[in-house]
Image (cartoon, rainbow, N blue to C red):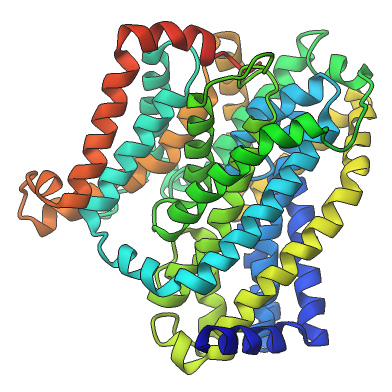
Length: 504
């Protein structure tokens, strides 16, 4: 009964005219910045924070939240159409989504991403409403040792996810982790590997690496060949909506991705990116049906699963923010800033002292998900028409948006030069058949893993045994070890040649 009363309060707040308007503005902006490569929710929300001074706390949070989960919708669009993830969590979507686009099935791929995102977003919001308190207790049990073990499991998952040789995948992860070490040491404050360049003192932004390797690198590779996008541009796109067979194949993937995303979104250090990787890994393990394409060759499950996971994770990531005051990612950190602007301290007291804020935000997510599905499905035809744009017009636009997005993140011209450098690196990787996905995950998880390991050792007086004496940490490390052992088994290694195929 109390739950229904709280939900009724939430909808009474969310369905006011001005809050519905701000939810619409947030969802529309989120979709647009998700579609534009390099212009992510972090930069957008950071630029809009000063505007929230004049808004009520509820309206400000509703708009900023709409931008965040709206970007998860829009990020899949460029990932599918031009093999360029608008959002980091859409990296996995490129593997099968772009292959579907090359085969003239960009419409069903975009529709699958939209439908999966809607279902996952709705379920994720329900998880927040019903299980916020129990799931918060689970997050309370995670210390620095557990976070480190979670990072290890994530990196092992990247090796399993990678196509081709295991040694190459491990090498790419190591390179990514080395890139992540550039900048200031989190414990000593000493600048390392900066080569005396002041701009490198704060490290190399993930956006620069991702846009360089996936954006510029892809452009240079396609300019050197008559295939690639040129073949895609001349392909006729038919069938905007998924077929009944598509719906039957994607439905279980949507449910699996929603489950993974809902769980990982609660845990700081998990997030939309890791959820998308985990969902895709799960789909790789599912036995293929007769006549079904392998993942990496245009299987619709490879789109629906990760997109469902990253959207469910985007919703449930609000749980540690609102109930613990812990931002699990950069966007949630900006949300903390938006709350403090209005003198609201995020944490366990939010539910009690600001019930209209907590439940109004939750109710607005349902409203926002309905808006997004209404906005996105009719616009699928417009996104598909982008395929007809001549490549000589398309690649300058991609370069411009990438450079603009990278520049606006830190207002740094140096980052634009780095973008070009990593673009050249991405081109070399393409020529050597090296996969970028493990590299990017190493860039993200490497610094986090280092930070949590150092904190763990400091708290345990240098004893490494704490990693295996804490039950949750030991379980995560055991899962990573089992995954490594299963991957190197002869039968599994043989099957990798069939199942883990290169997405190109």
